[in-house]
Image (cartoon, rainbow, N blue to C red; front, top):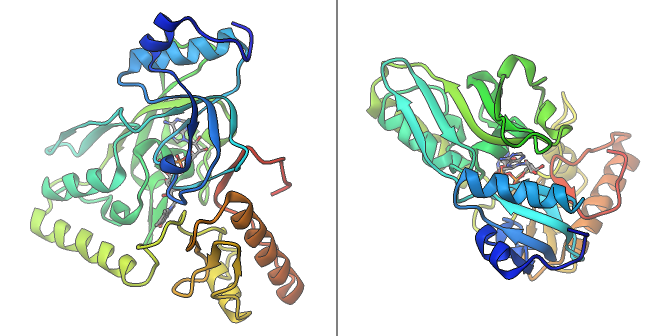
Length: 310
Ligand SMILES: Cc1cc2nc3c(=O)[nH]c(=O)nc-3n(C[C@H](O)[C@H](O)[C@H](O)COP(=O)(O)OP(=O)(O)OC[C@H]3O[C@@H](n4cnc5c(N)ncnc54)[C@H](O)[C@@H]3O)c2cc1C
């Protein structure tokens, strides 16, 4: 199919394809223009068929999870956007500590489920509002823990060979701070296998998980739309401390604001556009560079914007 042409109605229905779908409701920042084509596959078969359809038409595509680390341009996204959040579920073996979770499984739900089973490892993940797939791609982490530490492997799909999913060991994913090789390669994560520590007291793990959530919700602006921390920490410095030291808390552009609660969060406090947020990111970068000679690099993924050298 040529890019821009319409798929026949029966194919459109079979693939669950929708046209010109606003992406605000699929990102935690609540911004983003329309996806030219959009789908939320109900199962792996539909996901494979969608990828095949995009490949056949030479159409750009991307898979997103909970949209909790995305800044999507107001102009929207050309091609196909696949939201993975319906592909949920997990199987765990409480005795061995091995857990296989679908890529669309919310990582906070998984963390709670593991706590109830007395499995130690993902207590830090309870406050991260993303999916298992997004956590593997981003090497999400918090409160001293990160995905790479507990991941055994991921099951991925190469859209060029969609009929043959294969497994990549965590050791081969080049994990680093908020980075994995999956960010550079166009592979789709179908599921992730974790090796956790079995045999713990469920009440103890549950209490630790709840305490982690409480410490985050009491120190971060969880009530307002955001994408969490905007900038990577330029170790040994903390981005939030650098921004706060310059008195930038509360700085606004349009409806975007540097959170008065946590300076590394930019919140959508009043109908912000992606352009407002993008401009505020640039302003903060410029001010920190001028004052401290430190370049702040966004942790958040920008989609639909011209590339920047980050
Ligand atoms: C309030 C708040 C707090 C946060 N706190 C933290 C924190 O403490 N630590 C932290 O690390 N992050 C944090 N984040 C950021 C975010 O939640 C994480 O980066 C999370 O792992 C992103 O998961 P997601 O499913 O939302 O991915 P998305 O934002 O949807 O996507 C992120 C990237 O992963 C890719 N992707 C997603 N799923 C797949 C898949 N199945 N296959 C291939 N590629 C895929 C996307 O294409 C994109 O490049 C926070 C965000 C918010 C809103």
